[in-house]
Length: 281
Length: 116
Image (tube, rainbow over all chains, first blue to last red; front, side):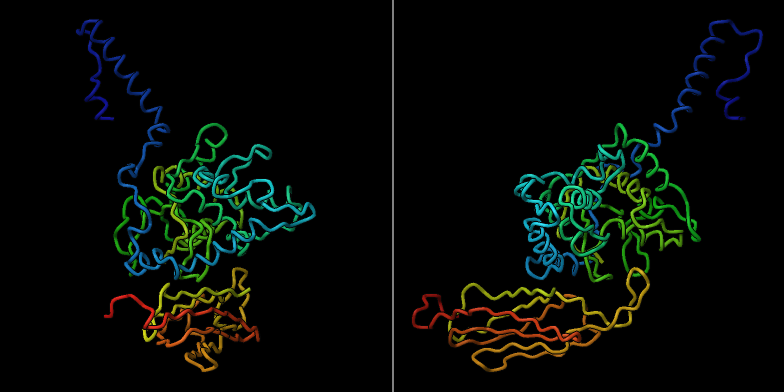
């Protein structure tokens, strides 16, 4: 309050009307700007020119392994994904290919837009949700479990069609509330360690946590092969691991909260290129 | 479900020592870890992997639980004649994986590559 008084000293009877009116106007403008805090919060804590892929924080071994066209451990999944893409399944006996054609052209840029709102269910879908939906509704085949080899392989294959293209998430319209929720969670302290995502990934990236550098938490390389888990993993699983890291209660598998955070992360990573098949520690 | 990939140089001249890389897709479950549901995963690692060339064993490895999933094996060979490389591996479940590759070796007198 003292500062406010300093800016807007209480009017005395001696001051002319015009001065009073000016001050009143200034006060109203200040209040209006305070009312727009939510808009201010959409400003990027991580400026676009500072956005860096997770590769910038891994060691030289990971860089080498990811660049290796033969030894990259995510490659067998990519082969598998390509095989599943053209393989008929379910009662409809349709393959992905029979509707979508060549993935490299039809799926180009698709991964840069996810998570996105599904028109039919009005829910926020990530790429894996979309594939599962297609599999049960269109192919009329048995559902694939989350984190199953098959689901991740197809997801990786579809994502690879957008390789090298910049991430561009749509946060307008129905996605807006999801985006805002994701942003809120990203900024909120949680868990026994009482930490928010932003404290590590906006404010302390590049600093070492144990033996590894903290990354910015960018989602552009998922599904990624994680050395620690020795298999391909979705962004959802990686987020669960962060929840575990701050000892927070982990949402159930497939929970909408994870999609909301993913959307916020994709918005945050805007302009970063999709980079698969990728390897992470 | 195991699949494997093999990498050999595109051009091999008689007498060359060349590098072979074999990537076997295998979970290499150590038997100490739990899956996402918290159930202990039974040990399943590749016990024995060998490479046979001209009906002679040229490479053998017996991995244990200390080897990571999707192991990559690298070794060197000197070839004097063309022939079939035959890889065979067995895991704890008794699964037998195989990979065959026709190795083409260019005879020294037909090679125009400069000698190093």
